[in-house]
Image (cartoon, rainbow, N blue to C red; front, side):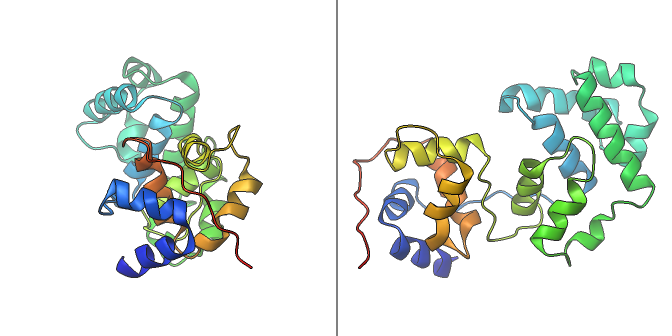
Length: 208
C-alpha cells in the first residue's frame, strides 16, 4: 500500500492533499460471494441507512444468511415485506437462478481479468457496470478499478478539482491517467474526501 500511496501523491498534487487530509487507507472488503452481490443490488439507489434496514429484514427472512437456496425458498410477498421493490426482487431472484444453474460460479471469478468479470456480471438482470465495479473493488480486491459512473466519485472530483459541473466519464478517465495502476485506492480517497472538511484548493501544475 505504501507503493500505491507514494505513486498517487507524486502523480497528483490534489490527490496528495486529499490523502494527507483523510489519513490511513482503510478499505473494508467483503468476500466475493452471492451474498455480497445480492447486497449490492439491495443498496442500489438507496441511502446506506435505508438499504441496511431492508437488507437486515431480508437476511432475517432468509433464515440469517442470504444464499441462492434461501432466496429461492422465499416468496415474492416475503421479499416485498422486507422492503424490496418489485424490480429488485426480480433482480435478486434472477441472480439466485444464475448461481443455482451454474451460470455464475463465484470461485471462477478470481482468475478472470476485470473486463471479463464485468461481462459475466452484467449479463445478469439488474447488475450494471456500477455494481460490477463495486464487486471488483470491494469483493475481488482489484487495485485498478475506476467507477466513472459513481455519483460520489463525480461529486468528489467536482469539489476537489473545482469543476463547474459533475465531470463526465471521459473526463474522469483523462484526469485519472496518472493514477494507474491504483485507481481503486484513488477512488476510496475521493469517497472519503466528502466526509472530511475541505482543504484550500491546490493548483495542478502542468508538466512540460
